[in-house]
Amino acid sequence: MPSNVNTRPDQQHFVAPIEETPLVAIDAVKTEGKPTNLWTDGWRDVRGRPMFWISAALIVLVVIVALFPGWFTQVPPNNDCQLANSNAGPTDGHPLGFTKQGCDIYSRIIHGTSTSLSVGLIVTFLVAFLGIVFGAFAGFYGGWLDSVLSRLGDIFFSIPYILAAVVVMSVLSQYANVWVISIAIGIFAWPATARVLRAEILRVKNADFVMASTALGVSSFRILLRHVLPNSIAPVIVITTISLASAIVAEATLSFLGVGLPSSTMSWGNDISAAQNDLRTAPQTLILPSIALSVTVLSFIMLGEVIRDALDPKARAQR
Image (cartoon, rainbow, N blue to C red; front, side, top):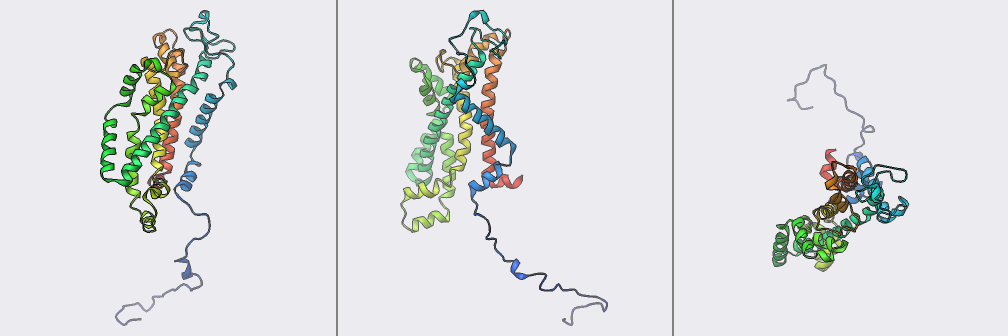
């Protein structure tokens, strides 16, 4: 011991045996278990959250109802309408009562599911396709292409897509159907997805694995498809689930305003629009389709929120 260190005569020093503190454990690297990535960590997170299973169960139920409405009702939604049952309450075989035209409310809700969900899916596919194409090329290649695509996106972003869809559907009212209303909504709703993807690609394209691929002589387009885009797509998946819910609401809004689908087409928006004048005398004709619409939209929003938190490492660390 150095002489300049002051110690008391009765002071004792204890040193643990080397066998009890193996030095190899300090720098040991864990090699057991499967390697993880963003998607694996995200799945481990969502499967332990009740909100994920509740929203997923509701979405699966809505999809099954849309695909197989005959499993849930045998009553024709339009062919069995009798004015004698106008705005009547529930009876045997008609658990939710009747509309003003004497049609079964439950049957119309079940058969209207496919229309509303079809519009949501078509709009979501169109928004995702346009958003990915414009956002990927603008963010990865940059330069004049980024300037042109970004300014084009700003033009569409400055136009409220509901207002634009109202104008388009007013002009094309004689051709109104599921495809026309979906295109009218989706063609103006993609800029938000493109902006999110562009920002994510600007971050990912400077990563080391991208520089390594470039050094190996891989073409730029292949790098974009195989490396940059798969590592940037997570925010797009989140915004896609939310945009599907927004598309369903947009279709109901246009139908409620009278510029959506024809009145003969079964959809929740048409039923809500037809029932607005009977809110005081027969509120069930408006409230029940509204509940179906709200539950469906809420399910997709909940799923989007769960996926967003699961794919965000910072959000996972805070819980």
